[in-house]
Amino acid sequence: MKEVATSASSASASAADADFYLPAEKFFPANLPVALTFDDVSLATLYSDILPKDADTGTALSEALQLSIPIVSSDMDTVTESRMAIAMALNGGLGLLHYNMPAKDQVKELARVKRHVHGLIQDPITVTPDQLIGDILALVELKKYGFRTFPVLDASGKLVGLLPGSAVRERYKARSVAQCMTPRAELLTVNQRQLRPDPIKAADAFFTENIGIHKMLVVDDADHLRGLVTFSDIDRIITDSKSRRKPARDADFRLVAGAAIAPVRLPDGTLDREKIITHVGHLVDEHIDAVAISTAHGHTAGVGDMVKMIRAAFPELAIIAGNVTSGGGVEFLADCGANVIKVGQGPGSICTTRIVAGVGVPQITAIEGVARALEGSGVPAIADGGIRYSGDIAKALAAGASRQPARRPPRMTASARVRALTMSPDLVMPPSAMRRTPFLAAPRPAA
Image 1 (spheres, one colour):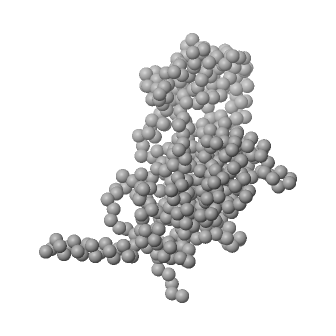
Image 2 (cartoon, rainbow, N blue to C red; image 1 turned 45 degrees about the horizontal axis):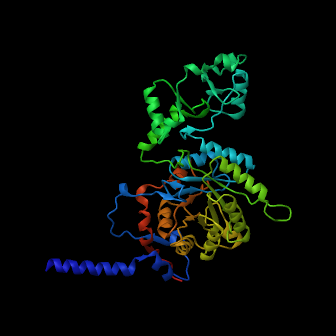
Image 3 (tube, rainbow, N blue to C red; image 1 turned 45 degrees about the vertical axis):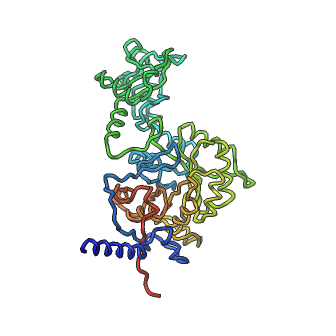
């Protein structure tokens, strides 16, 4: 009798919970026509058998762009340049470089990210035997290089030596590279065929076997230089692979990075196709992982034309487009060729679009509405803005967003900013369970 009574009681409690705690697809329609933001809702803590150590926070913006955490830093000036993008990727997220700088500077910022500890450097900086050490010192100063060891190539691109950092000093400035370099006959090299199928594993074995060597030079059958691997890079990658923190890397072990694209226009108001495509081409040459085309109002012909133009020129490039708050805006940008849709209009602490322009939808309702429109399409969404607390990230994910851009709150300490951008694994459930998360509305004051 006790077991029967317990079972009946449990069923009654479950039925009561089902009436009170509603999944997203029922909760938001039940609150219409009232739109909600993060402070208006909480997530219900119902039964779960998921432990924090089993939670998977990984996600994907495209087939080629995988992230370890669903966090993207905003493509706003003062928020994301190379240092921020590197920090985001090292922690498993993605940084979107802003475009409020000369186009060539944005390409340089991207190059700093992509060349930060990525294993095989396929195009290392090289010098020639006839250059003077003084020329090399000037080059290091001009380019702000953080290294002083250079492969030495002849006019045909063949490896003839290695200039050690110990020789790149002021006292040797009048000597030639040929006088100071380690000659080819004394160098240990690896043929590019030996790196397959795993270049990181091959490099790790090389440095383990050859104690004291810190540069692995990769050559082809004709002794042309095909790449360089540093001991410090491999050591860092191996350490990262054993860490719980998984950096976000591309297929060639480079850190991932994205960049916002400016809608450059001609005097007659039309898009300057030549400038835009040329600039995106330079970013692609530096192995960009995604470009972002986003304005406060993304459901416009101008944004659509930009997406179509870039998609036609670069069929394989991941394109993030926005910002929208409606199902119609989602369909429009997806039809134009966007891989990912950004959701939100001015809900952030440093973005006042709603106040200044009087447009937008409270963020969590906007996220849920757009997620519903995207359901079954395979196109992910980014919840853009409005995050003040770590719990808001969990709410955004539960409402349907695939990842959450982080903006830098004003007047906060560095440590507080880090906490605002960090999500520990026990804050969110696996993506497959997101849409089943029940919501509970916060009480509203009586009218």
